[in-house]
Amino acid sequence: MLEAGQTGANEDLLPCVEIETAAPVRASVVWLHGLGADGHDFEPIVPHLGMRPQDGVRFVFPHAPQIPVSLNMGMRMPAWYDIDEADLRRRHDAAGIRASALRIEALLAREKRRGVPAERIVLAGFSQGGAMALYVGLRHAETLAGLVALSCYLVLNETLPAEASAANAAVPVFQAHGTLDPMVPIDRGRDARDRLQELGHPVAWHEFPMQHMVCMEEIEALGAFLRDRLGG
Image (tube, rainbow, N blue to C red; front, side, top):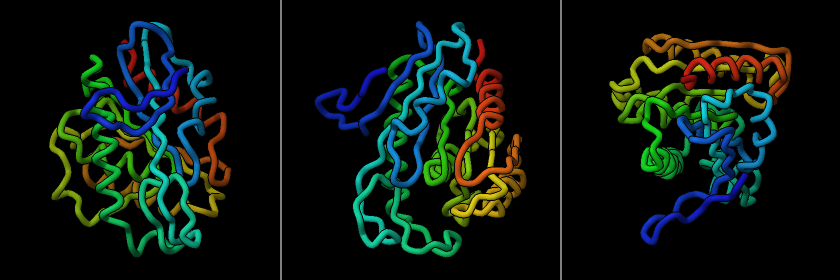
């Protein structure tokens, strides 16, 4: 495991935690954490995903920028965009979402420069990070291996399908949500699932009796999805 940050004189990437399951690296998972967490949040899950040595997967866990979050009285914390009210349906920080999208795209571009083609990259995220994974992945110009959206929702849904990328018109999506989630009610996840299916995406949908978290059954199902999408 290593920390990665600046990689070139003219390039200032988000700092990341990186884990390579085996060499040579043949595939990448860029995984975005939730509000107030950091890139270490999902690091412990990697050994439980059952990735095989021949898959050669690099997991990239970026740290979101520290920004004031209105819902938390303006306190600065890691966040992909600002949230100013608990009802996440009504308003979104469009400028913040688009700014973070550019920084996430830069990480995807770096994986390609490091020899991993887009079709062997999965973009994943939890909660606010899951919303960003869907936002970026649905608009990415090259076909990705898949998207992972855990305990999350769609942002700027009104800009779809006008902004959707034809390259990812049928990208497979793994979605999971807790039926007892008090922070992002499961109806938000179901709404996202329904919208994705309307757009033609094959969605592997999973519900678990849990709150705003992940569980071992979810990790096992996600591991199977990743092995299917990234297996050699």
